Image: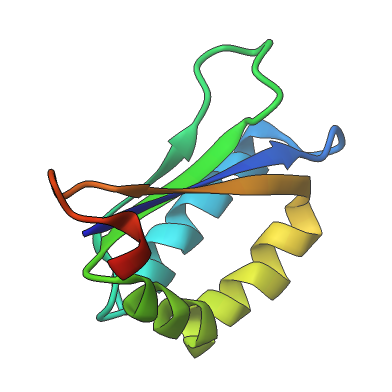
Length: 105
């Protein structure tokens, strides 16, 4: 199982309402994507944190993650939300199955 985490820096001109909308849209989009399990999104509670928004999900494999990245819902989210409201971000992948070699994820 692969756990995916993406952290995003919010544009300074975005309001709390914009951030709330990002969370709502992310949840609507990602719950329609079959490959993503245990999807979460939210905002930082620490104003000093440079990453004000995150998304995370579990995937059965890196192949399923690749399918997710090609999904029209995810691509729409990237275009309409991430590019419009953030200054960029970073992604992290973790293997969650004990004893499994990450190169076979």
